[in-house]
Image 1 (cartoon, rainbow, N blue to C red):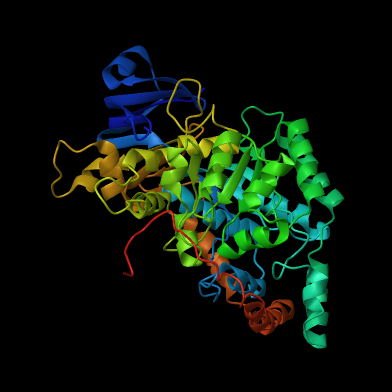
Image 2: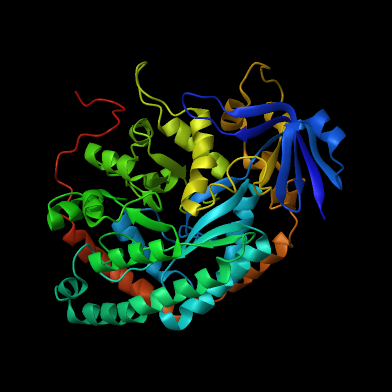
Length: 513
């Protein structure tokens, strides 16, 4: 039996909403036994009533719930580090085709270490589709990496079967290309084909493996990649499977203006309305990005109980714009936060992502809404827990929940002077950095101590990755890179008449007149 008391000058038990401040205990503590929180309260009270094997923290620390990264692809060594400069989403995706092959286990370890060291204890990981012949091995290595790092994971494989190069039928687009380019593209797409049956077979195997263990650090989700990348029949089948297995669904949605326009051209209405017409949306569905929403779309999200997973860094980097978070929250939509593995500094730092979100959604004007520090923290904790299906187990520090928590060095955050009257959540959002993370505990296990990841040798993981990436790029990757470069001008030509419609932005930052 392992027990511990975790003490802080402030214990942030639950992040608050705009109308209600966060629930904070001054000179508080958390008592956990074997990974489950048994008590939260004043330190002296817990100290007198509970005997613990160890005591962590102290009056120079802040204790908060572990952060939840609600949308992530686990790239580790990022696309930028692989030579892919940020661009519009539709051409940037192509540039990723020529990435070096990588060790899924090592890359997962590395991205997990980055997240954990900056206070993330749960990630909603969306795995790229690979051919059936290699998918099971890839998934196994990714999950082994998460397990060895100690990270809690809401895991899904995304499925994409159509419109894979531009938002048009694959065969129709290929018929417009020069013969040699069309042949190369057809070969490339065939190599990553995955049947629906293979997809559901992988899901059911994983669901059966992990769903029966209440203490498992893995939950398994379903993931149609996006509404325009799968058929309506597949979406309905996903919905049916989710209902049958009581599983959550994760989908990308209206990430770019071109994706919204695809819906208007194809169905005569937005992708959100199309999903609603199908009866697809619901409380079990989370929608990554959700940038190009209409007022009607926001009403639909609120009425169906779907979650929006906001990725401010990624949306800015890939020229997709700013999700209308203030409007979403104003309608009562659950908004979570994620880095999409394209955080602003390529570091998967959720503290920095919270700060960016809080600053980005401060609309000009005394009477305009602004995202508070409490709301930003809630997006990265309580709100983020819901799409993982772990809303009753993580996201707050309460009796009966997993002991997933973070200790930050309060003394370092407040040097050389900080007014005593400041709210601790404001202090965290204005001053907190990953370097202030002193201790991270996941299900009662300390994985970061004194600011250092201790589950394994971090330097050795980096050494192995560096050694692998130092090898010459192989022929298959070089061919994919050449193909992407050849396709780019044709993709740009395809979209030249798109995006011409006038738009009325949710946010007005400045004026042309």
